[in-house]
Image 1 (cartoon, rainbow, N blue to C red):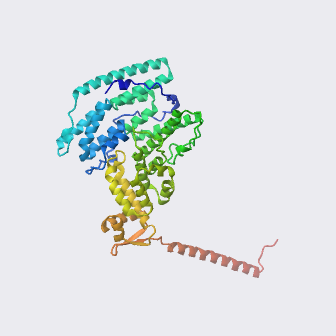
Image 2: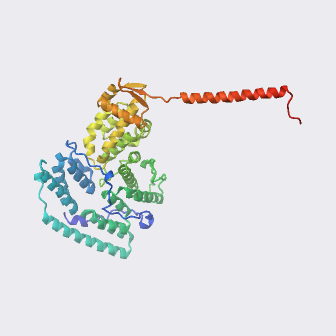
Image 3: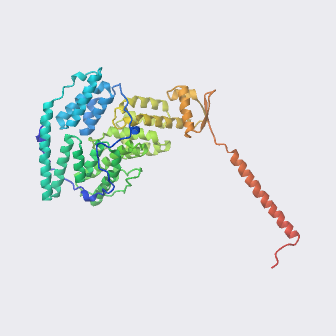
Length: 490
């Protein structure tokens, strides 16, 4: 890499004042961020192998940069044998030309060696051998560059010029990232309280739970900037799963500079995107859908993490899996902001329309066509099987909702399965209490099951009889007392 690229300074850019460490409350952050946190094996789902090529790797280089691109290429190399060689070659080429990330390069070549040992991987022999000379030269350059930036950062801290400290701090952080995520980088972020950088590195290190401590701090910081700039904003409950108000509702005064406007809108969209990913990885799919659907893609520019296409896919798949029919109509079809995000995704538009029109057979066909593509998505792949099962479950319930009875054979055709398999699915839904129905296994008919109100009616009749009897006895007793002139003397 040309060393001059690291030395370029954009002095002509107007920098916006950001909150310093004193603006944030870190009292709840008791455990430091580490790369070796233990992960329960019960929470780990092995990625599915994809043997059908359903994506073009060239599109990844246009949509993602930095770790977003490298992690995706490494993931695809691990789960898709037909693309393994091309993904590794693209990854190695990107690391050598654009970064100084020796750990990522070593990880790529470990995959190359494993593929060669496994054999039968087309094109793997064309991957160039590791350039040890480049590694040695790059390591020396990177360390020298880092030492120089750290010395400059220390000098700026001694001079106590706030804006210069910020610029120097950013330079050190980006150099650390160029060299790869390491414990030194995490310690540096903790020491200097770089909140936004901390969030980015937390995502790269896949420490999702820590985001729920960091994100409210970032959200509050953005709201404080908005207040300082006299921007009207609706207060948000950062721990709530309710929707944020549309970013378009922010009314920025004319005196606010363009870079400040862009910073406010873009930062809010990025925070929503990170919230959505955090909820997705935490398996809170409904909250994830609500966050993703409130993102204005016109102001989202986040190639270091997510693309506009990802936002649309995550939002719709999670919504179909968790929203009721009413919620789909109100929050999805009734949302101009989200419909706008689907304009460039015709498959997703058709999927949504078919589902809302109860054409579940075609809907399942579309999902099946999208499956391989979604299994190559690094953040969605671990959840695809479960989300698909939730969508199918919701479709079965909605399909039978308007019927008193339905032939299981006809349902099996609609849901692209056999009669026996569908019967097993229906039994599971009935046992879970999700479907109020009963099955005639001989005739293969599903009947709607209504609650038996006879016991309740009998109890109401008996109570009514008791009250009438008591009232009648009281009337007779009063008549007898009056007849015998037995009454209270005043």
